[in-house]
Amino acid sequence: MSSDVRIPVLQVSSEIYPVLKTGGLADVCGALPDALARAGCDVRVLLPGFPAVLEAFSHRREVATFSLPWGEQAVVRCGHLAGVSCGRGTVMAYVIDVPGLFDRPGNPYLDAQRRPYADNHRRFAALAWAGAHLAAGIDPQWSPAVLHAHDWHAALAPALLKLWGPAAQRGVSSLYTVHNLAYQGVFDSFHLRELGLPEEAFRVEGLEFHGRISYMKAGLYYADHITTVSPTYAREIQTAEQGCGLDGLLRSRRDRLTGVLNGLDPKVWDPASDALIGSNYDAANMQGKARCKLALQRELGLERASRAPLFVMVSRLTEQKGVNLLLEAVPEILRQGGQLAVLGSGDTELEQALQRDASANPGRVAATLGYDEALAHRLFAAGDVTLVPSRFEPCGLTQLYGLRYGSLPLVHAVGGLADTVVDTDLATLEDQTATGCAFHAFTGSALQQAVRRAFALYRRPRDWSRVRQTAMCQRFDWDQAGEHYANLYQRLLAHD
Ligand code: ADP
Image 1: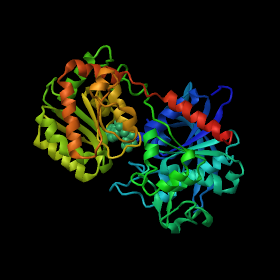
Image 2: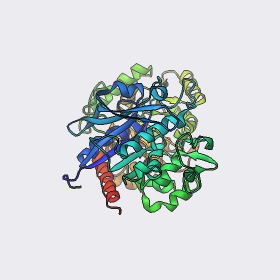
Image 3: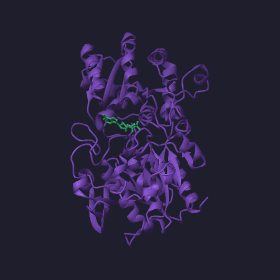
Image 4: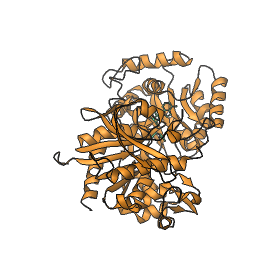
C-alpha cells in the first residue's frame, strides 16, 4: 500500500494486550495497530472503559457524551494507551466510559462465579454504539473511513453502521473479524428495542438467530467484509460441522470472507530478547534453553532431568482445547519417560482432573491453575513439546510461540494449526520442512500415537535438533497480516 494514503481505521475490541487479556484476541488487537501503521494506516482503537483500560489511558480528552438507547449516559474519551505501540508512539485510543457497565474488577465478561454478566447485551451494545457515534463523526478531530470490529463483543457496530441513519449517511465501511465462531453473544429478542435496534433487523436476513438476537450474526450479516484468523478456519466455518449454525450465511458470503493468518509479535515473543525468561537463546545457541528447562523443573517441583522430554500446554481449560484428550494421553507421556507442565484456567472439572494427575505423579506432572503471563513465557522457553490438541482452533497462538521457542508443537491438524505446523514424516524430514507433529482424528488414541512419534523423534537427537532449527526459523509476522488487512480496507474503500 502506498504510504501517502493513510486510511483512518478504527479497531473496536473488548481486549488489547498488554492492557487487558483473556486470550488470543488481546494478542491480535495489541499487535495490529503497529502492523497497520507500518502498512500505511492511521489507526485508532476503541475499547470499553474497564478498570485496566482506564488505568493505562493517559492525556484524556473528553470527546463527547451521548445517550445509550436505554437512557444511560456514555462519555467518549480520547488519549494514549500505555504499552500498545503504534508507529513511533503509543496508540491513540477512544474509551467509552460508563462506570455502571464497565467498572467491575476481574474478568471482563464473567462475574466472580464465572457466570456471564446479566447485562452483557447492554455492555457490548454500548461499545458498538460508541463505534457508530465515532463513525458518524462525534469527534470533530478524527473519524474513521473503516471500522474494524473484532468478535461478538464489537459485532453490533457493523450492523449499526448500516441501520442507524447518522452513521449510515457517512458510508463508513466495516470489516468484521471472527476470532472464534463458537462465542456468539446471543440474547433474548425482547432486548431489541432497549438496544436501539430496529424491528426490521430482527429477521433471518438480519441479526435474528432462532428467535433470538445474535451479535455474531449481526457482524457476519452486516459487515462489508468478513475475515477470520486462518485460511483453513475460513473454509471450515462454511461447513455444517464447524459452522455453529451460521455456515449457510457464511457460504452465502464466501466471496466476502477471507482468512488472514495471525502473526506473532517478536517484541513480546522472542527467546533471544525475552525479559521474562531466565536465559536467552536463539537457534544458533541453544544453551539458554537447557538452562530454562532446568530452572522451570526446579520452579514447578519436577524432577531435574534434562533428558526427560518436557511437554507443556498453556491454554484455557475447556472442551475446545482438547483437555480431555490430553488427560487420556498423560499415561503415555509418563510411560515413555516424559514430563508434563500445564498452565491454564477454565472448567472446574478439567482443572480438578489436571490437579489429580499432578498429585498422583509428583515430580512428573505439574498443573498451575490461573493466569500467569510470565510463567507462560517460561514454559515455552523450557518445553520440548507444546501441546495444542484443540478440537477446533481458529488460528491458535501457542503453537506459534512453541515454534519460535523451539518447543515443538504437537497439534490437532485443524484451523490455524493445520496452516502453521508441518508434521514430521520421512519426506518432511528429508526436505527439512518438518516443524512439529500433527494428528488428524480427534481421538485419544490419535493423540497418543502423535505423542509416541514425538518421543521417537526426540530419541534421534540429530533429527530432533534439525526439526527444531526449522521450527525456530519460521516467521509468522504481523507485517504480512497488516498488509493483508490494509489491502482489504483499500478494496472496501474502492467498493470492490
Ligand atoms: P484462545 O484465544 O482461544 O484462548 P489462542 O491460542 O489464540 O487461544 O491464544 C491464547 C493466548 O492466551 C496465548 O497468548 C496464551 O499464551 C495465553 N494464555 C492462555 N491461557 C493462559 C494462562 N493460563 N496464563 C497465561 N497465558 C495464557
